[in-house]
Every structure is written in C-alpha cells, then in structure tokens.
Length: 374
Image (cartoon, rainbow, N blue to C red):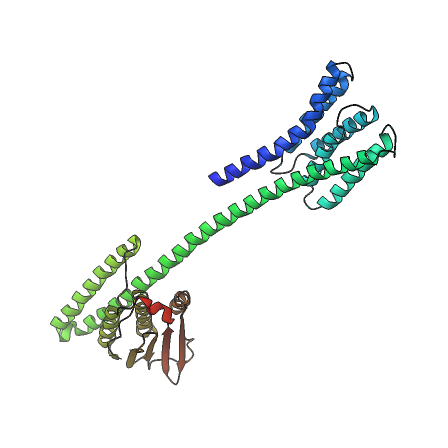
C-alpha cells in the first residue's frame, strides 16, 4: 500500500516537472499560433509547435520510469526540427525552448550517462544558431542565451528526478524499518516464550521424575510433588497469557527462590544470599539469567552443588555449578540471547568452563541502577 506521504510526493514531483515541460515549450507554441493568426507565419509551423509540445508532455509523463525508446527518439527529432525551422526563418518564436526541454528530458532519463548526454545536447544547442542563424557566427549572445536556457531546463528535470528518487529511498527505508521492528518484536516474543516454557517444562520433568520415585516409598511426598507440577503448569499458562498481552514481569527474588527450590529438589545443593535492592530493569534481566542458568544445570550438567551470588552494588551476578562436562561448549542459544539483551542495556554475559566448574557471569552498567529505591 502506498503511503499518503508518497502520494503527496508523487503529486508534487509530477506537478513540478510537468508544469515546467508544459510552460517552457507551451509559451512558444502559443506565440506560433498568434503569428499564424496575424499572418506573420504559417499554420503548418504552428501545428508543428503544438504537436512538439504534446510530444514533450507525453514523454515527460513517464518521469517515474523510462519512456519507450521510439517515443523519446521521435520527440527529440521533432523538437530539434521545430527549433531549427524557427531559427532558420527568423521567427519571433523562442527557438531554444523545445530543444532545451527535449535535452532536459533526455538528460533526466539517461541516469547513468547524464553528463555525456547533457554535453552533447549543449553542443547541438550551441551549433544550431551558428549554422542556421540569419547571421551565422555574428550573434554570440543568441548562443549564450540558448545554452543558459538549455542548462536551466536540464537541471530542473534532473533535480525533480533526484528529489523523487530520494522520496522512494526514504519510503523504502521506512518500510524496511517497519519490517525490522516486527521481526525484532517476534524475536523478543520468541525469547520470552523460550524463557517461560523451556524452564517450566524442565522443572516439571524433574518434579515428575521425583514424584515417580516417591510414589511407592512416600505417597504423600509424591502427591505434593504432583501438586507442585500442577501449580507450575498453571503458572506457565498464566505467564504465557501475560506474555501475549505484554504484562509479564520477572521478579528476581522470586526467580532466585524458585531456582534454589528446584535445584534442591533435583538433589543439587544450592547456596545463595538475599540480593541487594535492584531496579526493575536489572531485576528482570538478572531474573532471566537465573532462570536460564538453572534450566541449563538441570538439562546439561551433572552438578552436586551450585551457588548464586550478586555483588553488593548489584552490578554483577555469578552462577556456578560443579557439573561442567568435558567436551561441551560453554553456553548456548539461550545464553547468547541473554547476552544480546544485556548488551542492549550496557552490560554483558559470559559463560566459561574449567576444572569441572561451569560459571555464568552477568554484568550490568551502573546506569541501570538509577531506578533503585533510596
């Protein structure tokens, strides 16, 4: 769909260019008719001048693209003939006008060879009064005036074409920016959905396995685990609906407590301390990091202990576990996506493995603490 801005730009360019193309050769055509009425010149020349004006207008109507080569050739030939005839018969008719308009249109359409086409047109314009004028070579003012008119008309045509091309490029850029915004929003939604469903499904799998082990040995404990699975499923459904409506927020203390409970239920000793007050943005981002790291520990690690630490200034979150496996590349798509998010807020995320320990370190710029409570 063409935007209203592009419709206005198209109308502006069309009126600007077509008005010049009509007026420049149209005024001489009117003078030719006046001369024919008063008997100073013949009607054939007046008809030729009017026809030349019509051809120039028909050629200019293709300004947004390229006119047929035959139409362009006929128009240039007729314009050259009318200008040469007016000059040879010393008519009152301003002979450079049709030729100047034809040269301007030809220069506008020759987008890759404009300077060569304009130079050739100016040479023809300069040669015409020298060869066909009443006093060949004795009236340099006539040649200079013709060159000025031709250059001015050519520049008018070229500038109109350039302005239109800029409008087209800006509209393309606006359209691409809109498509990128949609794509980024889809990526954000996919990342949030991954955070919700990936983590929750992993926890449900862990608790279901624990309940299966307890069902014969401790039915009441197994029932409690099943109840937690049901609660997790309902919470995931609520979070998904909140995500669709854009209302979902991640609470860092809640994520921290949930991670500790889940890891403990999976038989992993988890150590953590109460975090310092964090602004909303930092809390949300650190909460997502805790959720992703916990999911990775449950899925990929053979850990027995884990620790979650936040620095006193709230700028650094460190998550370690002793279940790093040999040959596994640190990090994954989830951590890479979180790194991109943190970098968007002046932070970063690093994951490394060494000596059997896997470590995730998230940092946020101090600017993110401007919202921290006093």
